Image: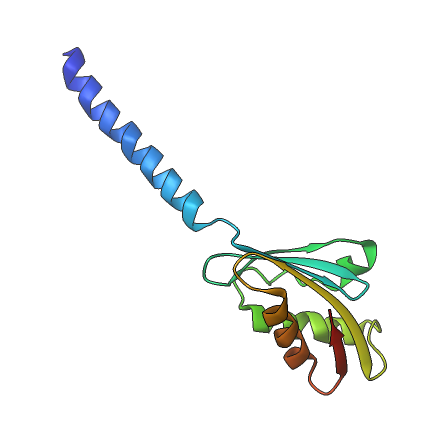
Length: 127
């Protein structure tokens, strides 16, 4: 009787461990992007370059970050953040100085280009 219970229980435990491991592996952060415009914002992306989280790194950033960014593309996230930056008065003139740092599969240069594109007509200096 004990062997009849032990084998199915072992199989169930192995399946649970496999499913949890698969979920954690596929849901990990692959890239982290930090934008320092003052306010400073950190964006974490999954393996499909979808937003996992957006973190305010200072007090000013708390009013910039929207609640509905999780799962959005990086381009859509940049567009929303930039719109909020303009609406809140952090960007007023035609020149924006942005410090960009990327850790992961996306390079800082690639992110800098995306930021420049998202800002549109504003002159952007991305470092």
